[in-house]
Image 1: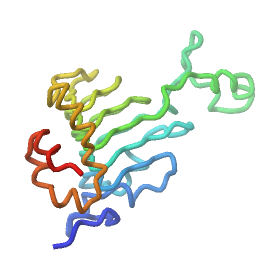
Image 2: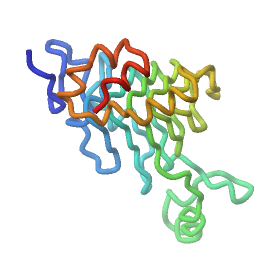
Image 3: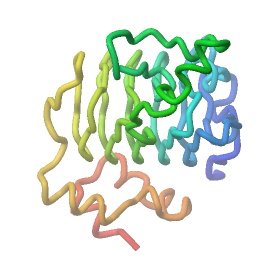
Length: 211
């Protein structure tokens, strides 16, 4: 049988609810790795418009390879931020005219948390919200309904609002080993050869078959 193609928008025949994001996304501010998918029974192909919100600034959304994104996942980008330099947080600038002229420097000077970065092999559950500038490590799991306001370590499991670290999937030594192995960077033929170990093996077993 053939290896699934990373360029196939609909990787599951007869299931239009699941899309690979790399062939779907056109916005240069959104970068997605191969085989990362989004599942949504109603709006799967509208990911850029419905799931990446307030994407007005220079900040990027970067998502790695082999990630699983459930229905309703939202990425809130830095364009959602309002200045807190003074008494009011009302965004006078966006309405233009005299307001825009008088306040443009304030709006442009608002601090940014930078790009939002999701690592590789990350599972983000139903209706989770990722706030601006958050960095999620490789192998992490974001529980359904979480509001992620701070960075998530590699192979961490977080949940809640605001999301808190519930546990880590492996010991520090095993996490370090998995980061070195970085199976998501292997050629897809190598991934295919060892797909059972990747899905069900231990960190040591995976390291034993690493290139």
